[in-house]
Image (cartoon, rainbow, N blue to C red):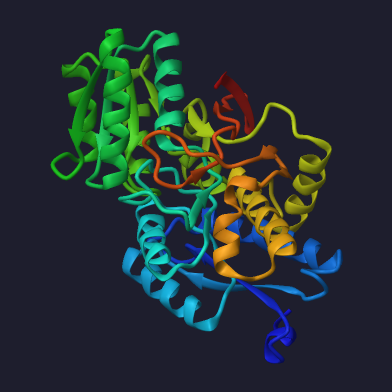
Length: 363
């Protein structure tokens, strides 16, 4: 594909992906695999009006400033649109910059509701909003009999937003959210706090792999906490690294996943191709990457590479994605064009077979 870039004939999409620490590298690799597979398929089918589609990839490393600088650079390079990003705080920085520059940005995988501080026509999003997913997770907690819920939390606008959503949903329904500040507590001290607060569930609102992995190990080894449920709404257990680091302790930790119960024929074909590309089962993030390019390619075929026309086209998108029909609408409280029909599941790894996922709850 790079050969096309030399003579200026390609249509370029800037891709923002966390590929180095402290970014969640495995999520970034899955996201990039989905983006790249879709680009290859677009080009195999004739490209964009005969011009090849090209990804111009930039590693954000989970750094908002680095992401904003990458948006500036990609805009200067003349990309038709931006795609990608997994981390919410990074996607917010990229979205703010894209809005200022008038550069269409289809955010693949970041869920925070306030992706932009004010409404914008330039940004659309495939991932469901955090309030939608985390309310479904809160409903799962209540249905499983959990009303005293502790959260091990680190400072972050994303985690703070998650706590607000959980508390807002649980409190009117008799639930209590107990915050455990991980700046002040060692993973072993978390266990005492859980016992003292009579919590029946602990949610990991912390970084991966640390301190999340150490907290899980401490809780699983404390005989007083044999009955406590550990959960990870942000999805840490989705990736193989989680199972590698935790072994048998990786299982029975419910998390949010954005896949349907059954994949469509398109989804099944893409799943097979992604599995071959990644050498492992693709996560929902890989499907989000694929769907991002599928949407942008459809828009670019219809309207060319003009940035303003791309942004104007968000409300007219109707694309068959790997996880359903993708259309964007305005959702109250969300400042970007939002796909609000993304499938949402609460799943965990099966203790009897940790490579297998069990669907526990669906929204």
